[in-house]
Image (cartoon, rainbow, N blue to C red; front, side, top):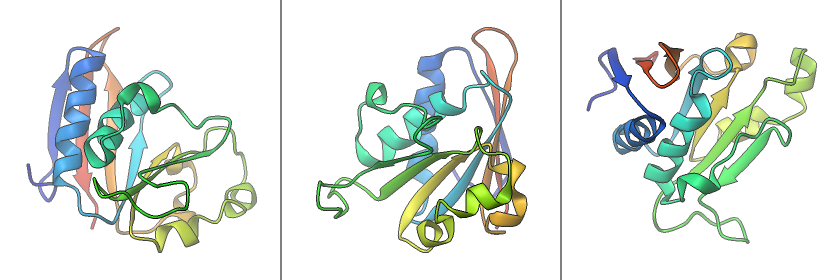
Amino acid sequence: MSLLEPQVFETASGEETIELGRRIAAALPNRAVILLIGNLGAGKTTLAKGIVSGLCGADPEDVTSPTFTLIHEYGTHEYGAATATGPRVYHIDLYRLDRPEQVATLGLDEIFDRDAVVLIEWGERFPQLLPRQRIEIRLTALNDDRREIEVLDCN
């Protein structure tokens, strides 16, 4: 899969969405910012489970929404070194933040400068704080189980 060309996928279950996330992970560079865009329940965290699993080997059940903690970090040992199985991954959720000043306190610029894959849910609410070079993944719930997932490389 090349992320340079826009692509649209359809999944019929959470398991298929996780598997698509693994396939996307295999095509990602070790350093990328990815916006996961979609309404509540569109499958952003489910897709993130697959991407994190594909990059770091994490069990999808261990990947949860960072809605309350705002940032989860995967692919590190307790001392902060990247694991041998893949890059460091930051999963960020900006849903509970209302103002750019709140987002600025998270230190995203510092995270963007690291050799890491950064997944951001609800980042489209703060475009002025995000790098122009990024990948956007738009998720649309078609019904209870089916999702349309569009991958756009904005680099």
